[in-house]
Length: 146
View 1 (tube, rainbow, N blue to C red):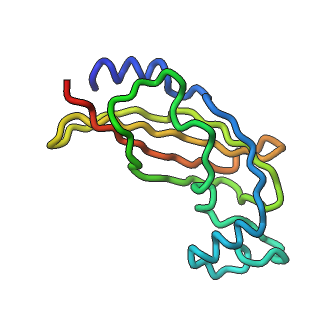
View 2: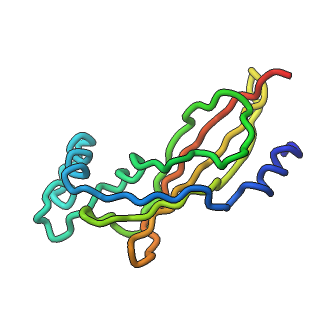
């Protein structure tokens, strides 16, 4: 790995740089589930005893920042994918807290040169502090020619 990327990893990885509260609205999670083609009542019916947001719902939530202050720009950032990891159901009607940190920084070299990837992870917690889920967002930046 290039030394400049290793330095960025040492400086920025696993340090929270954003925190945001989210009110999980039942009608919003139902509409999200419906649009995703969900058919299970636990995602569509507020009266279901196991009513919850569909697992990918948290990928629709975003914090105030996607990168920490002072993080260098290597070029124009583009979406490079999302990932979701669920530990406990997200219950509509509750407030949850999202804390964002850089989970990974790495490079790949393509035909057009070096590309720098960042993985911003939002960890979601309920009011009791239970870790409910993670949502990863990857950004790729094609390095500017020098």
